[in-house]
Length: 219
Length: 139
Picture 1 (cartoon, rainbow over the protein chains, first blue to last red):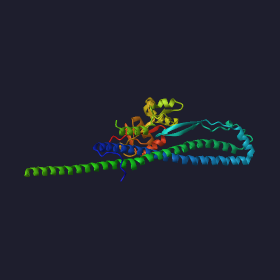
Picture 2: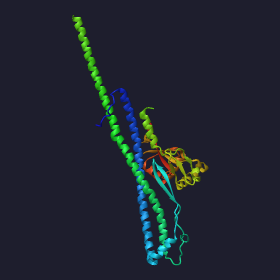
Picture 3: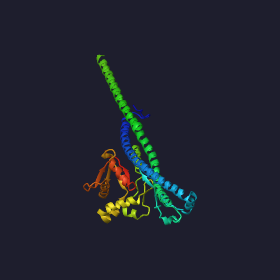
Picture 4: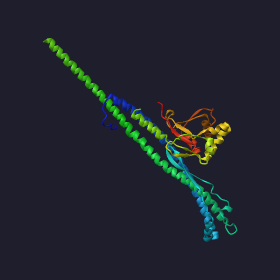
């Protein structure tokens, strides 16, 4: 049986107050459980998205690196390095927040980073087609990496909120509510005990009074 | 209000701190460059343009210009009265959106009660245009 709350006097008033507290604690527990369930469901969805995003990012990057190695093999590493120096690109990232049940998760949006061959800024005549493929695949991979960053951060934030909410639910379920109920039982038992004591006391007094009256009559 | 009720009210408030102070109309959000609403805790909640456009496609055909007045985000009301993990969607237009997403063709209604799998589908389709609201059980 759970511990009782110390320092509560066993009165009917306290019992009524405890009844109210138990009811509220149970309502709060129900609500927090709903929040925990919803958070877990969100968390599982985001975890799934992380897996999907990670797979597609790896796939895109593997493809891009394969093309890059091929381009280096065909044109030479120095030539590829020189081309990389002339093709700078500025990527504009907009980071905002989304609020999922009090958890602030990032929302990252970018403009389309894919460029046409002309926009990349290197000549076609003395470059291999593999370098075009590598550039295209890297550009696609950037989008995937940004998506992955967003969901990865969301997963971490949601996980910590799930733990916090779980702890609050468990505290209510295994400590607060049982303690309140145990205290209510204790008060109820104490009141019954006091009633019994009172009853016995009254009986004794009545017997003493009757004995006194009989004694007076006999005298 | 007794101290216990005050504590409970505080708990409910804190559970719903992420809800917007004021919901915005679909038309207004579509016109904004970065559509967002301000939450009760002071933070902002961004809504994706793609989701707004998807909602507009769903409701635009049926409700025409009226659709622009649709208030967003959509509230998924977690009401313990309906049982564990049951949620309620209120409002005819919101129910239309829900039905379109779930691919159902139920009778037009003002209120729908949905359960975990449907909530997950709705959240997957509209993660930023929907928000959970936690309601107190009336029993």
